Image 1 (cartoon, rainbow, N blue to C red):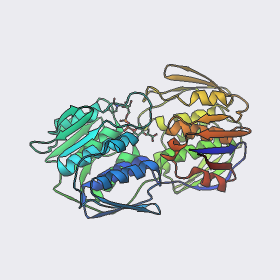
Image 2: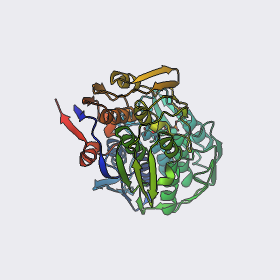
Image 3: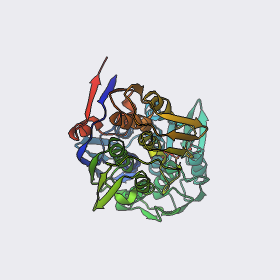
Amino acid sequence: MQKLIIQGGQKLEGDIPVQGAKNSALPILSASLLCEGESILENCPELSDVYTACQILTSAGCKCDMKHHVVCVKADTLRNSEIPEKLMQEMRSSIIFLGAMLGRTGTCTLGYPGGCELGPRPIDLHLQAFQKMGVKVHEENGILFCHTPNGLHGAKIHLNFPSVGATENLMLAGTLAKGETVIKNAAREPEIIDLANYLMKCGAKIFGAGSDSIRIQGVKKLHGCTYRIMPDRIVTATWLATAAITGSNLRLLHTDVNSLEGILDVLEQMQCQCSYQDNHICISAGKPLHAVRYLKTMPYPGFPTDTQAIFMAALCKANGSSVIEETIFENRFRHVDALVKMGADIRVIGRVAVIHGVKQLHGATVSATDLRGGACLLVAGLGATGETVLTDIAHIDRGYDKPEILLQKLGAKIERIFSP
Ligand code: EPZ
C-alpha cells in the first residue's frame, strides 16, 4: 500500500512540464494493433493504465516495449483476439481494444470493462453500432463473443450521446472495414483528433474528426509511424487548480492552450490571471479566489467532467458560493465526503453540489475513491493547512505520472510512503 503525505499550505513556484495525455495514449496504443510494421509513440505517460494497455497488446502476441516515455509496438506477430478478463477489469478503456481487434481480425472475445466507479458505465452504444457494421455478438456468463461472419463493413451510425469511447471504437473498426463509416453526433474531444491524426499518419482516411460528423473510408492496410501523443489537458487543469488553491505563480510547459476550452474562462472567473506564449501557460493566483456561480459538466467543448472534482477542491476556498452540476456521470461526487472531512462546506442534492467557500481547509486522513477524485484530494491537501494523509493512491497513479516528484521540485512538502 502506498500513501502520499502532504504538509499543505506552501506557495509553489517554478515550471511544470505537462505529461502526455492518458486519454490519447490509450486509444492510440489500441490503434497500433491495426498496423503492419512498427509504431513509435513518443510522450507516452508512465501510468498504470498505459502499462495495462501494453499488457493487452503483449497478451495478444504483439511486441510492446516502453522506455523513457516512448512506446514501440510491433503488431505483426498478433496471434489471438482475446482480451484477458483480468485486464478488462483493470480499466474501462480496455473496451477500445474491441474496435481495433475487430478491424484487424474480425473477431474478439472479452468481458465487460471495469475501471473508475462513476455510476453505471454501459457499452450499449458500442455494441449497437458494431452490430450495424456486421458484428454478431453473443454473451455467455458475462463474456462477449464477437465475430463478423460476412466481414466488417462500414455503416451510417448515429450515436444517441457523443460517447468518447464509442466514437474511438468506431473509428478504429472503420479504418479497416469495407466501405464508408459515418459517425453522427460523434464526440469532439481533442483526444479524438489526436487518434485521427495518428491513424491518418498510418494511412487511414478519416475526415471531420473534431466535428460532430466523422467519415471514415476503409483502407486495405495501415502501416506504423512515429507519433507524439498530445499533452494532457486534464493534468494541465489539475496543476492550474493547484496554483489557484495555493495562491501560486506557475508556468506550465508543453501544453496545448487550444485544448483547454471550458477551463481557462473558469479560472478567470475565479480571479486567476493566465497568460499564454506558444504552448506555455503562466498562471498567477495571488488574489483571493472568487466563487463561480454555476458550472455544468458537458461534452467537449463544455466544462469537462474530468476536471469537476479538481476545480471543486479549489472552489472550497473561494469567496462566496459555487454550484456545480454533473451531467455526464451519475456518481461523480464521491470525493465530497473527504473534502468535508478537510473542513469544506458542501451540500449535494442529486447531481448538483453547492460549495460555500471557507477561509481554510485543514489536513486529514482521506482516501482516493477514483482517479480524478484522488487528484481533487491531492489538490485540496496542497492548499490545506497541516498534514494530509492520502491513501488508495493507486487510483491517482492511473492518470498522473509520479506527481510527488514534480510537486517537490516546485517546493511542495509531499512524500510517497510505502507501507505494508
Ligand atoms: C472517456 O470515458 C474518458 N476516458 C473519461 O475519462 C471521461 O470522463 C469520459 O470520456 C467523458 O469525457 C478515456 O478517454 C479513456 P463516454 P468514456 O463513453 O469513453 C454513457 C478519466 O478520468 N455511455 O463518453 O468511457 C456513460 O455511461 C476518465 O480520465 C452510455 O450510456 O466516456 C457516461 O454517462 C474517467 N453507453 C457517458 O455516456 C455507452 O455505450 C459518457 O461516457 C457509452 C457511454
